[in-house]
Length: 490
Image (cartoon, rainbow, N blue to C red; front, top):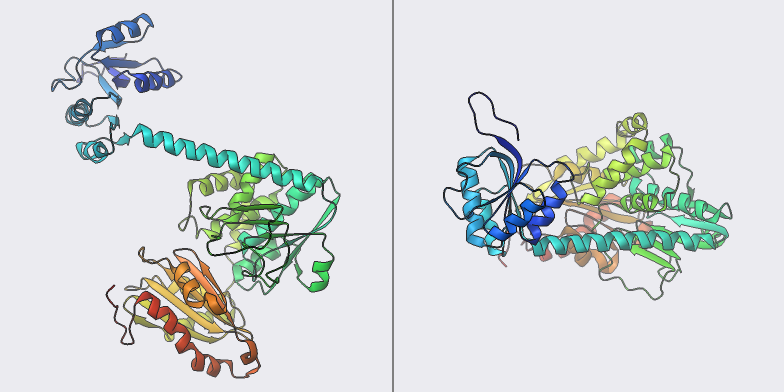
């Protein structure tokens, strides 16, 4: 132990451990991998003697003593790990009082002790049963993910012909990058015996999405019945099933489904060869980043850049629905990515139409009890609607923004939500799911309602004005807004 400075004659110690039962002993064993600058304090004389026999620095002392730190070195980090609730609380209080600069990690004997120890000044409180449970779940998820990756790879090893990888309708970077990664895994596993084609429907309208596809030179083909017929196998990425945010017939057999959207309420009449759906993941691209790590598949700069941007875009710059796994996978991908390309993708020019849509969204907005509604009229670029919703939900006094418009064939609705009491994906699904595609997450969601025979009407904006009120009424009924804009008490 090193002596302190001139004005501080007391010696210092890196770690001080109070209580050396089974938990304390295992903590000491881990700390010894770093340093021997450790002092152990325990009230059991025999235990202390045993520790000394093992060459540990150990002292006998009652940690419930109010003069606990008298004649003890100054600790940098204190572990308080006894099985005595009152003694642990006293040790935390004495640490905070005597050595406020020291970090303290305390053991909670029961759940009721957690808040008490935090209030007493513990920097970290551990409830061992909870730690074990979290560790068990983490290892379970890691093991499941590893097995899923290897099972997917083994499936591809036996396939030949052509694999059609379908993105969702109007694909975004998460969906596109996931398709790219799936093709890379398939071609590595099949050793050149399996061709891959990325198929999509709709449009790539958002300016960042167009820059993403163009700058990375991503080869995609518009889906047609003829191209589907040429595929021996089909895979869906970033979509939980045929007919859900894609134009496949609901009965189409899809061999592989990989997605991060919830399957709640989705019924499937067949079982795919492989399905991996993780609603807890912030992006489907994050699932594929984990696959690539597990399988040690070579990953080129283009795929790494695409996956990193896919995670970043779907989590709104790591601020929405992000998990520790998403951050870990993004950290893995970033050094493999092309940062110059990323800068160019994230700095595209706005199209004239996007600016007009956002202007319309601002000028037509109305707010009812924190809910903002905005009609942007007829649109060609549907991706401008979620951009407008992203902008308007940040207005003062707005908790939820619903922006809607009409295209040649659909009414398109995009919602953004900051109210933790509302799961906007479930609300849109309940309101519009019976006659269109609808759903999403707690903070972001979308709906697309087909016009059917109304699609022949030429003046789409007049049509939207005619039919939108009863459609929106379903939404306002569910969230409890009356016709005067007041919130109904539930």
